Image 1 (tube, rainbow, N blue to C red):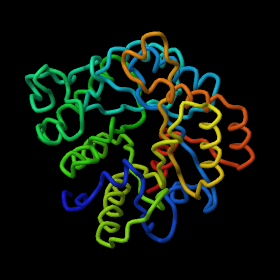
Image 2 (cartoon, rainbow, N blue to C red):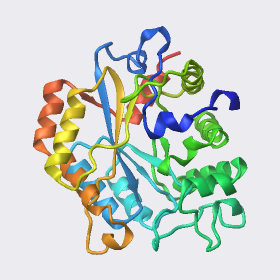
Image 3 (cartoon, one colour):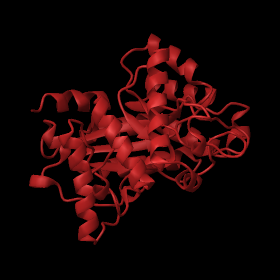
Image 4 (cartoon, rainbow, N blue to C red):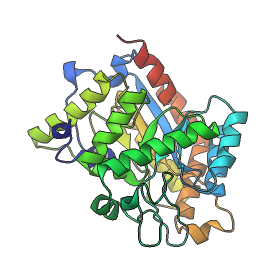
Length: 321
């Protein structure tokens, strides 16, 4: 499988800049039973469980807004609070935000599998590395797979329901060897994974070989029985102004292409201590306000955009022989 993922898997999922020619000129949305012109949207909130404030924002986004999906960082300290909410509110489309890095300066976490089991995933202080490059330099693919499986096992042990897998900071997408293990575990366990193969939102690659390899990666996942997304937007606007954030999202909604699109957010309701974790609180709160916007809700309805979930994608995939 390794040869399928060389030359820039990260380009596909981190920046969503690669455009792929779909087999038979159909979107994956159409393959899953929607119409050729239908536009499906997964509005996805990352970093649940990272902090109490992350949980509050996600809860508000589901209860009062139009979030359709989210994913949880299993090594983080506020997972049990989120687990309890999920138990009390079954049906939320919650994934596992597979975490191999610990990026904040003074708010850190270590691997679920344990330092002695995956020593390449920890730094000199015993926490996961701050950045993707350090993880790629020091960790082996075997250690990454061990940690992926440990995070899945922990979710199962504590009764945290999950519908899909994705990657915190995109670490699993930068390394062909890491990506191969991510695909392997998803197919083996029949858990949908975040993978995009479609007409990317940005500059299309002119390298035919790269296009073919990216298409082949999505084909492996599809033929392994899992759904595939058509498009991915990894950000909305770089602003802490809620009005500007709403404007940016509405523009994206007007420009959605046929198929399945995921838009990734980090909606948070920062409290008095969140600034000690990250300076990103203003932007995260603006993304939450965007999710609560009546104007955005109106545009979704007027555009005929269909909100969907990974759970629905998998249910549709399972009906296809």
